[in-house]
Length: 355
Image (cartoon, rainbow, N blue to C red; front, side):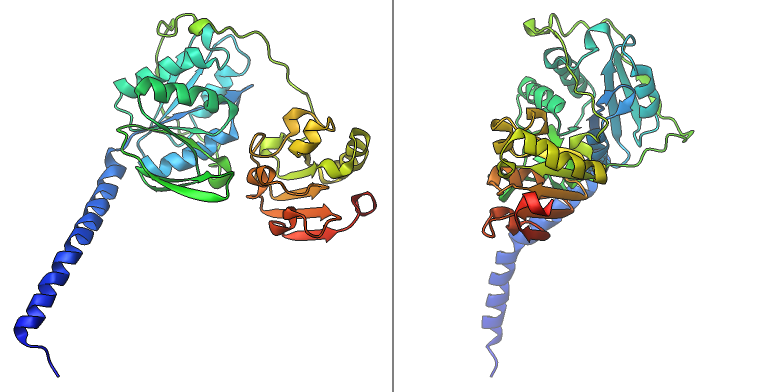
């Protein structure tokens, strides 16, 4: 049987009306994405220390390439009197960027947010920057929210995936759910979760150098830093890899029972593996380890190739900081411990015998 021609025509007309908004939206999104790659201009904040570029910055550059391709500008700040600043500039010239902006001033020797944020805000406005991007670190967590406030927009933090130049995925609820954000801001201020973006490779022997623009000084827009003064920085010297960028990590929890056990059990294992040492919040709160070793939502977020959890039950806050590790090994005497839900290899045993 066949429907009358008038009925078929009517149904086709109704169907076309229903599909029209969807098709129009898809075409607009496609056109926007294609044109956005040409018009977007990203500014990447380059963090450095002692002549080396922070690995978080290299992850941020990976993200910037997904948004702006060849329209990427780098910004490095510091003082010529600081150790390694000139070396950091030379290394920055090897990065895959279109231009390098250098803001040098004695007042910028340290990352004081009240001094640096007005400088970056001015650059963003004056140069029609569409995306300000930095790797998620203690520095950007202090500076970027201020920049967003000065620009009167919302910051998007811990971006894990870029859908298009205005749509991003970030974690919520301690990493147990993902939120897709479509931003209507004219400028995007983003921090990138480094575990989600592979750091770009820098060829230090490359002869290809980018255009360098010295912004000059002295810096006038920062005033007295809002009353903030840098007093001191105390660094813990260690022959071990830095926790945030280590390829292998051995972490201990409350199950090790005391500080003496923490040191005598974890240290030899970490020495054998040439790994960094981490700790759960419970271990830190109990005085087993220093706060700088804490892994988790309120500590460091890590993504090593190998993560060994010794005596860690697996609180949701801890899992949020290490669940992106490539291989997770858990040692715990409780077979119901939540850590086993994310572990690739689990050993139900007494840690004092197993390790």
